[in-house]
Length: 91
Image (cartoon, rainbow, N blue to C red; front, top):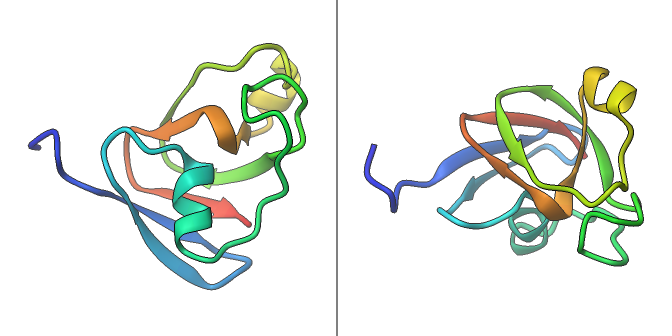
């Protein structure tokens, strides 16, 4: 797929379908789509923007704001996560 291709994100709790443009985080896409995800540091440190990923593959570069067992359970930090495939998020 070309680099500029958008990746679809489904925010299931908000009933919103959005396109995440290349380089955007889940949080940026949520904000652009009117989906409210609480956030504070936006650096992957505080854990405020933790949401549950229902399906899809992501790239997440956090700074300790999420624990390994939370990641194993499907949680992501929206501020520092970019989709690699179509995603469904509980938000």
